[in-house]
Length: 389
Image (cartoon, rainbow, N blue to C red; front, top):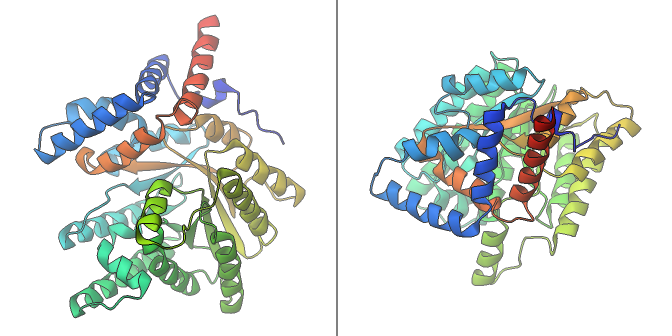
């Protein structure tokens, strides 16, 4: 089945004319690199001096990309998506915290989100960022195999214990849990811990999912290795795929520290490996569950075509498509309309804590050739269509 990604009536069915106009103004604004750069500087300054920013941020960029400040206040967005057969994945998007107290709060909130998902049929997954569960220095040292102090060793043990408790709670709640990927210098410990949790909790089906950032040139080989480990350990592999989020930082750090750049040489190679990973998993669907986290129309259609070749049901519980809330509705709503499993990543959290996430969304939308240009063109087409009617 060929998806009509240009069907803007389906894409924006959940948006009123007022919503559409607000989205138009937002994407028009963040399409400008100068405005985004200046806005980011002002927001960072405001956060530093504790200047109140909720009044400016909440009705604009926050409302578009975030579900709410809490699980409860995100419920309206979840119910709205539900009307159109689009699921929601609540993502507590507080990051970059290093204090033990903040880490513990993030852990407790994630536990609440898992248990809430177990009670809401429109939330099919839980998710967390590993760097929210442990200090960055300890994760880096553990990944690189660097010697640690007794205090750091204790912190590493606490990180492992927190991840285990989250996965155990997901298993008991019968909710698959996505463990997000991080910068390459943290990833080894995350891969190791995730594989250990899969071996424990994925005996009957995929509950724990690892995330493969396919802009890394070693991830296709690591996928094959992960599958072979699952076979040897007699468990199911949960595989979430994304292209990747930290390319410039990864390249700059590799050059500065003098190690091999972990990133693919170009986008074409990333795309090739991404689609090869989807095909690899679909051909082993009896052992692998797939979470296709993409804003790319080709990779979406490719997976649909491959599913059809293998005569898999559209709503096969092992095959999912996902996009971020507030972006790529032309993919999410058109794919869900045809009966495939679609879930929106729905961030939530207090405004000041979600700012790093929002600034990333703004920065990745600054190029006219990129996301904002695409979003704007679809919004303009839909506005024109509605005006004609």
